Image 1: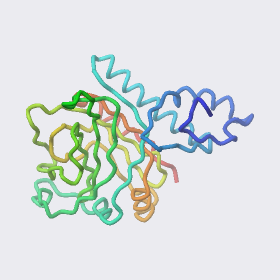
Image 2: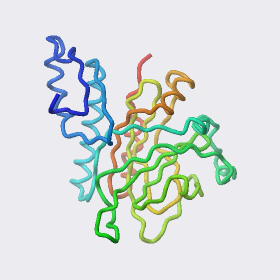
Image 3: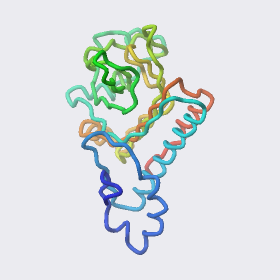
Image 4: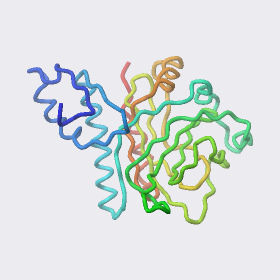
Length: 254
């Protein structure tokens, strides 16, 4: 469809039995941002219903944030994939509170995709905007995130210093991340995750990762790439509400 160039729509969605409902879901799919090269296939009305609902919720979060005086908020559909050689880091036992091993630089880190968002947090010396990039990794069963407005590669970022805190430079900025997977192979849903620019990797603690269809299926999904809806906003999370939103999951039925 010319109106939805990044969606691959099944003809069945426009059949007599689905057409009316599809047209009610159509609006939420419009004007969606995509990472380069990412497309979403919608084969059933159930899939379309889920994507439309998640996008509508993300766009409501954007509208609410801007309505409260926020300067920046963006929704993008992206694909996250992780290094297959180190993917075991996603399934290792999470550290216990106060366990010193979490700080160890010897603990394997599984680097994943970095996602650019159109909003910018600073301007380079040559006058061109420097896009904010959100980086992802796994360590000891925990998802790590990092927001950068420079060219530092994921591999060169400081390892986590404290699972409950971070260090940052004086001119760092705060962003809030929501990321929800569309994969049926796993539950990957993190909301209200605080990120600092110019900081170490930070543990994404407000969310859930569950191997809905087993470890092998989750491993394949993470290494081949999972489609995700990502929302990034400037400022710190709304702590009174984001935990409740985190627990409002679209868990696949078995």
